Image (cartoon, rainbow, N blue to C red; front, side, top):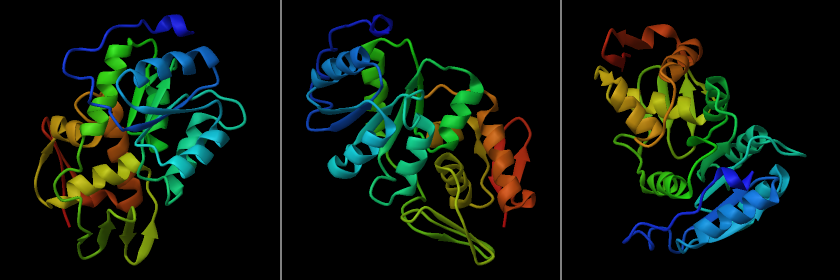
Length: 241
């Protein structure tokens, strides 16, 4: 398994990018844990490891890592369930989570994002590329309009509490659905291009299938009502009250 990742030296000037960052690596393969830990520690980060989901949740609550690299297939509790539980816990819900898995099918990636992941990284991947993805995730900032609660006539969202309230009823959404809705609702009537949506919600360094946005839009329409989200053919989407 470790042979799928090939060691490489760090680019000049990037050694301090991860200094003092706390990263939790979760995988049931001991050689993978050791190999990833070695390459991440070279960047100056503090690395914690876990071999299953239950241990990962316990460490995440105690250590509050900046980012979690999470395998999908693990004993006791798989990565998907682990991610869901981390997102449901107020102590861990805002931690950046990236799946690192040999499963690269579109449906696996969509399931990962639905569980609340910020990224889905497919093995094999070279350490330098993985470190670049980690740094990109840590650099990302909340996009415009997400800092304050947004309130419209029939729908409101609260970024701090990750809540959507429709007609007085609280609604829980997977993280990417929530962020997609928050982006669209931040400027009602504005048309957001597909490229803008991908960059804002998934990040420039995240590779997702062409259907990812469409699938998330369809799910949002089912939950909040289809009239609110309009398709602008060949361009993107907009939210209308």
